[in-house]
Image 1 (tube, rainbow, N blue to C red):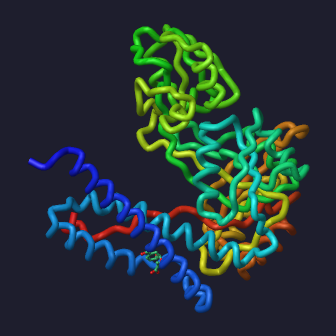
Image 2 (image 1 turned 180 degrees about the horizontal axis):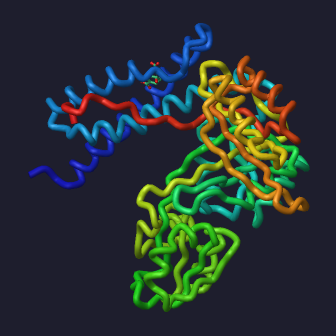
Length: 388
Ligand SMILES: C=C(O[C@@H]1C=C(C(=O)O)C=C[C@H]1O)C(=O)O
């Protein structure tokens, strides 16, 4: 039998080769983006993706590889390829927005969910990253407004707990623009210093958002005391500092590793598919290249007469503009009046969106465009059922 060390050496070599190939594939994706730039072809080509997946699944089968295994790997590869091309075309479209060092403000400290989102988002940009942690959303916005940071990363909604109202309310008053978005899987775990047991835990430190997203798990353990902290990273820092087996934090496994902490329970969120959508804000708006699916976010307040909102929404329908989200929030200082937040799948520079904005400005009390940015929804391409 071959020696374990020898086999591992071969695996190590093989893994290095896989990485080199993935990196080469990314370089080719950039070449494809350059060609699309000259022809204005959309970045996403689902027919091509489907052909590629069918071929790989068939080829994989001959090598004894499961079709779902291939699908999972290639969904990640294709998503990365599409988002990489989008980031590349955006940089060409917005040369003035280029910074060589991106200073990004986020909630918490190293290892917070927002910090992990920053790392992921900016890994696709050419800039190097300076991470600036803040204890509140307001401080993140102020840091960008004052020029202490170039970007702010703000969570806006979560599949378990819904909209993050504090962020929506802050957007009413800022001059910043939304320039990007990112959807991140959020996997809550119970993070501790030692190999303790859930039955020994007396206190859990958590930010109110993870607390809300894990409410079912927490209500099943009513004897555990909950201490709220400013961020998941603050929760993990606290557990590290206390260093005993009766305390735990709600955080991510990756975040916990940065504090030398371990998970004793995973999958705490109410929904198994727990995702957060983050927005990226900056002082100047960006334009979105035509090859990229764009989203535009605007706020509007309508009169309180019957049918005002319907009339506004009809404008979207008449222009064939698809609304992907509608949120309403009270207007501070005007009891019972509502501000509507609307996301549409459209490029602000398109003719229909220009018409929408013109008409809505006429029929609403107030309209403000918060930004137009590349949509990061890269839905998996399906392959024929019988292949799976
Ligand atoms: C690379 C391309 O762009 C996108 C990414 C693909 C890939 O990485 O293989 C395939 C199709 C497109 O959605 C392409 O069009 O070939």
